[in-house]
Every structure is written in structure tokens, then in C-alpha cells.
Amino acid sequence: MRRTTSVLLSLSALVAVTGLTVPAAAAAPAADRPTAPAGWKAVDASELARVTKGTDTRQAPRAAAEPEQLALQSVRNNRFVATEVNYAAPNTGVQRARSSAVGGSWESFAFEWDEATATYALRSLANNRYVAVEKNYSGSAKNILRARSTSVGGWERFVLYYNADLDRYALQSTLNGLFVAMENGYTGSLQYALRARSTEVSGSWEEFALYGIGA
Image (cartoon, rainbow, N blue to C red; front, side, top):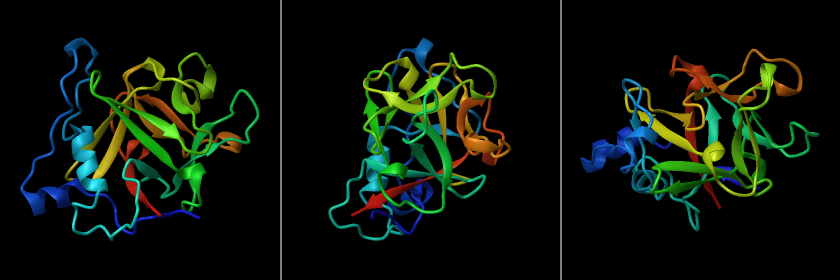
């Protein structure tokens, strides 16, 4: 069983300890680079790596940790995002914030940085598939997130933002320019599902905490 580190990955603590500032994402073509919402800054791979490698002094030591492997926790319901690998089609691999703890690969993701686009691809360790935004779905499932892709294109690219005042993260899909929200009000099998559907980060629906996964 894998476990999360006991402390939230905090860029604000990193800044306080090291005197570093949180950089914007690496250069990408202006037409392809979303505009950061007020109070939020894009996080590039080097900044994320500093935090997950334990530069933050509040983070507990992690022997043989894999820094690129992270767990996402919804601020809205305090639950960890899991990949529903056992769901039947068309919802196989849907992302839901439904776990009270990180019990294994279902709640584990590799954040893979692409320098050319200054974006991340999220690979689920549950099925080794990349998380995609289902833009062509309709109704309440439109823009739902699913770990279903074997390669990375526009459907699988996200900008990661950090808000130092809130100590929270947000994800923005580059496919439709919308922020990922957790559907706390849904019922049934898609309750707590993640969808790229918000035009701004309006509150806890779009806010997440990131945790490094220990050995």
C-alpha cells in the first residue's frame, strides 16, 4: 500500500525558506498559452520538482520516493481523485474524487511535463493511460476527465496553476480552455466526477491539493 506524505506540498513554504519566486510556465507560443487567472501562477516542471523532492522543509522525509508521482485531493470534499478502471464503457477510467485515502495506483498519477507546450500530461498509474477531456461527450458527462489515452495530444494537456495565498492548485485544459471542477452535486456513478467545465477558478470546486507519494 502506498501512502501520501503527511504535509501538503506548499510552494509558499518553499518561497519562504529559499527566497525563490514561483515562476511562470516555460515559454510557449502566445496563441497556445492560456492566460493565468488573477492570483494564480503557472507552475513548471523545475518548480514542481523542487517541492516534491523535499526542498519544502515542512515535508516529511521520503526514502526512495518517486517525485513525479502525485495524488490529487479535492478541496471541495477532501477526497482523493481515483481512476475508475472497473467502470463499464463509455465511462471506463473516469476520474472521481471519491477516496478517503491513497490506497494504491487508483489514486496515483505521474505528472509529465512538456517543455514545448509548457503543459502537463497526467498519466494514471492504475491503467497506465493518460487523462483526456471528453469534449465530444454530451449532457452532464461533457468534458469529463477519463484515463483512456495511450498517447498525448491536445485532449490530454493541462496547465497547472498555484495560488500562494490559498496554497492550492488548479488545472486548466488546453483543449477547451476551461478549468477542472469536481462535481460534488452529481449523484450516482458520476458523483464527484472531474470535468473541465469552469471558465474561472471560482472556489473549492476547482481547487486541489497535491501530495507526493511515499514508498
